[in-house]
Image (spheres, rainbow, N blue to C red):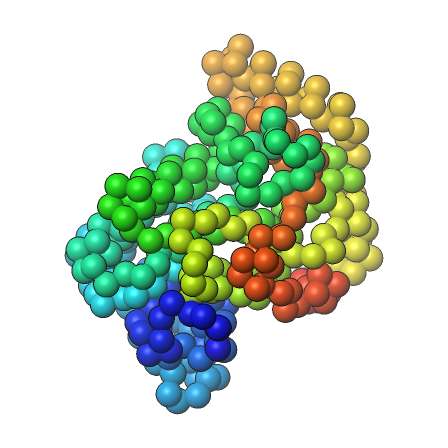
Length: 350
């Protein structure tokens, strides 16, 4: 059980995006901590089978209520938030490449949910799960250290990433409701969340262009967070007393460099051919790509630009001191074990 929790074990909790990669682990973690009244909102097209399996693996006193709905519907939001004491908001459109789609599925949906919470007036805390991607990694007050004091992107639309733009606008919206309406909130910003079932190699290692994988800043630290560790931090952010209005970055201990990660991938999954791009060359390439994109009036999309370079490949050292000191978080699954589970879950073709 979470010590000094702001709610009792029987109080209603809402998890949006509960059938997602992180959502399932958040539900499991809440049950592990003894919370017994969890409302799971999932999209109508999502199968509830895995969540039902999670419920069956815990004592019969625990109650999982599955609700199918769409956060774009205010009526669905009103239904989902009735009497709820804590909201863990994980639902977000991660696959949208267009700015309008990302805005609709991150910002508009969040506004509906916030308005529904204000309507019922039963809320003790709203946890918005954001992303480390919102940081700009430029002009930081403490050099290479990436912590909660780092500046966020001032013009996220110029980075060319709809997800980053929508997540920043989502964070700003939640903070606005906190200031204007007194809504109690916490922002959680995970790094690269990984684990079995999460395929692909993070873009923080590099990008594939014309069939060639370019390693961009191979010595950079990858801000990994194993899915169970991330879920633990999210749950604590929602339940520990005295942290309203705070921002928490979530990364694990003993983070690997991009070079180390690819070496392990080569050894344990399959041979992986890549080309290393030195730091200066990667910055120059992003600069030239950005300029050509502007000259061509974006006929060539600005997928490489200086803002992207600063955010992902310039290099920083993400730290997790705040979640340890303020939330009492400790890493449940070691990085060595987490990477082992990830690699073992992928088919070996080497």
